Length: 105
Image 1 (spheres, rainbow, N blue to C red):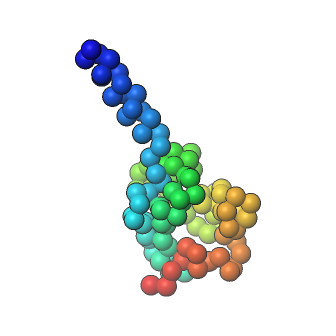
Image 2 (cartoon, rainbow, N blue to C red):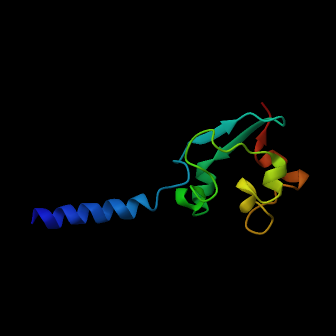
Image 3 (cartoon, rainbow, N blue to C red):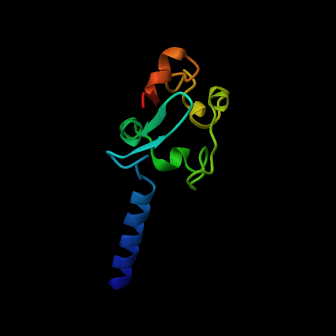
């Protein structure tokens, strides 16, 4: 009976591990840029149905500071630009969208 219970616990843990949200609800990531503070809101992405493993480790490495991003790279379809290309999500290269990520400090 203990073996069955242990197997069930492992299966349930595996199911929940694959469905972890982008950034826990209410948490944001912030960093400085030449154009103001950049804010990544996990809840916005999670509300769209995204999971951590949708971007990590396919697009972003899991180690903080391991990805040095520049707008030229994002606009070329790297990093955030893989989705924010005007098809899947708002296009980063359109000036009207700058304020969606770059906040006044």
